[in-house]
Length: 93
Image (cartoon, rainbow, N blue to C red; front, top):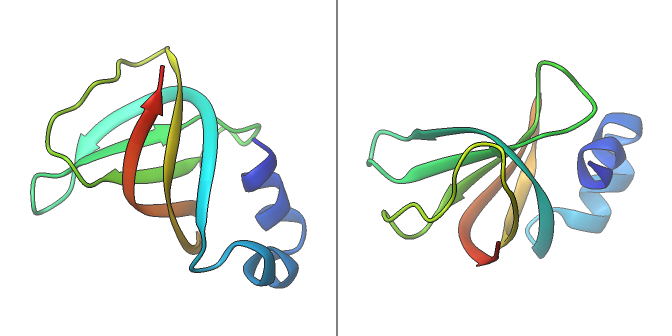
């Protein structure tokens, strides 16, 4: 929630703080999909009804379920309505 809020409130400052850096975030899973390479994408809940933190995992095995709170670590690559995290791994549930 805080990461998304930082980008929503001041994208330039958030880019300076997070862009291309490894971040560890926690949140409630609201959606699980896959990209064109069949790698899982987990979306974490934010205060915004329409957008979240979109995390593409680096392992095809999903170890998360919708509704649970998890901790992820990955590279923040920016903000395109969603905050984008790539090369993510689940650290803890």
